Image 1: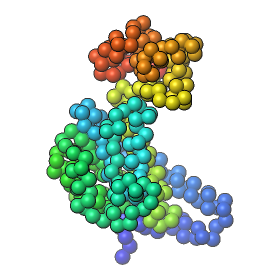
Image 2 (image 1 turned 180 degrees about the vertical axis):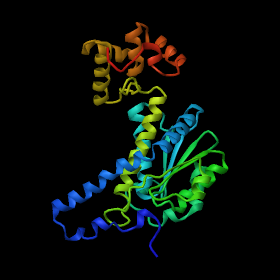
Image 3 (image 1 turned 135 degrees about the horizontal axis):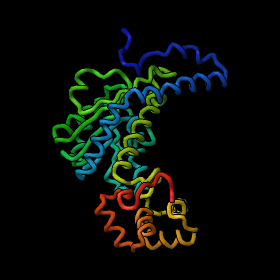
Length: 302
């Protein structure tokens, strides 16, 4: 009997891939990859619901916690790790749990995904409560570790979601607050879900965290203004943002950024409103961190 999971089915377009030359292989993989963005777009409503749950968790003082195994787990940990340097968030705000622990990030931990109880234990270790949103990632939809983690999270009162790349069961849809299922189809190499399914996963996770950061006011126009200068690259980026949005030259931008303690958003308010850092931070707090409420539209620049 053919496996009902799309992720385990054989792709009829690649059954002779082992007979292709280099360019033909590249073209075939690229043609399959083009299907991914469209499949993710079909899930736009579900992704938007998940985004609302992420925002609600953050505003309640909760966290977004990803749970996965293998590629799915690595992508969750990656997305979480990129939030602090990109948006200046607390590392606790977005977290990734991977079956087998952090050793599984660099070397496969065979069998780690098979134990529901380990997933539940990982949720307990994180101290999950009703403020959190826990998103399970299992492209096949069947990973025991992920199901065990989500069941425990629901017992603790957390909102839960599931991201998979095959047809969701009715039970799955009825159990969780949101289910996201981009149907990317069978992989070029049967069962190799690090390919199209992995790409779809990254697109969804990027959308969720980026959207949440926008909604929380960490973006002004389309600029990452809530970054904290911690290296030369970010120093340059911060100065360029200030130069563009305030219409100042590099020395003035450097001085403003230094006076703001390296925080671009604070420096922007200081420069636009003519206030010191302490007053800029106070006004930002009053505005819920949304800079546009203080200095107007950021879409058109200075």
